[in-house]
Image (cartoon, rainbow, N blue to C red):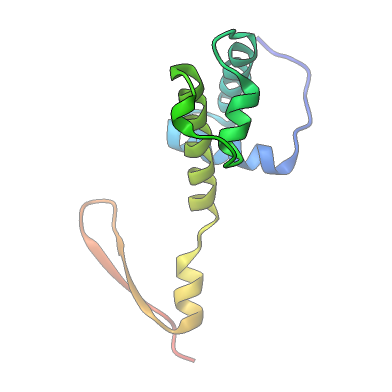
Length: 118
């Protein structure tokens, strides 16, 4: 089923692209997934959006939320962590510092990377 094109903010699109890669979905599938989850969340009488927002802002205790609210908070935390990881670029930092570092090769082995000498 197709739908008309919709413009999204760049940061939302990039977050969806990163989350999609982790979840083995296309970016469009990830956005649709988030839309369905959001629809269900807003329709749920068991989840207090205001209390979830308070916890996410650090103004309320996680333990005060019911199971549904805690699930929403954990999902948001997961997304924030994934976004933070996606923004990391240790290779650039290590290269700029002239450091050597080790990365996995995807097969269980290690590869030593060395900054190019200037």
